[in-house]
Amino acid sequence: MIDSDLFRAVLGRFASGITVITTRDAAGTPHGMTVSAFSSLSLDPPLILVCVANDATMAPVLAQTDTFAVNVLSTGQEAVSRRFAGKVDDRFVGIGFHDGRLGAPVLEDVLASLECRIVARHPAGDHVIVVGQVEDAAAHEGKPLLYYRGGYAVLER
Image (cartoon, rainbow, N blue to C red; front, side):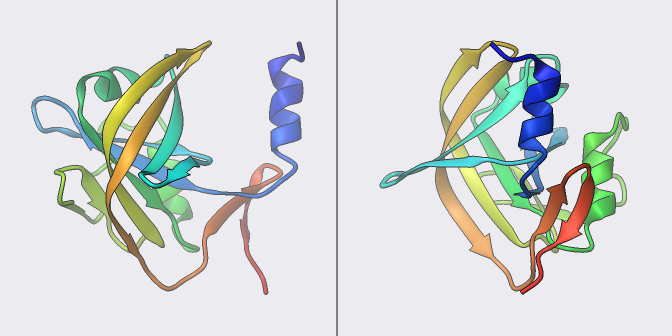
């Protein structure tokens, strides 16, 4: 088995879109975290998965909630990415968002958003894999915010 440093180095060789996963806890407090990618599992039904580290502050919240949103960031949202990646007490202060159809916070000015109902959770080493069925989605014009080889990048065409 390879070590985690080599694994991170290899994964850093290709660009991935930056997403912010958002949800609410039982008290209704919004929570969110930056992730480098999510994956599509199925088109019918529409299923996606996200992996969350067991020691992430979002892990216990996702273990208790039924819904989450995936917010695909667009170019110019580097500050949003950093805010949700950092150790900030209230990540939503100064960030525009609204409640989606399922009640999860949906960030404003994103390239796309997907609202999901959690259908499965699978422990997987130092992460938990959360599978969500997409119940609502929206896409907007723009370019994705990418992360490549340790820095933000813009998709040029």
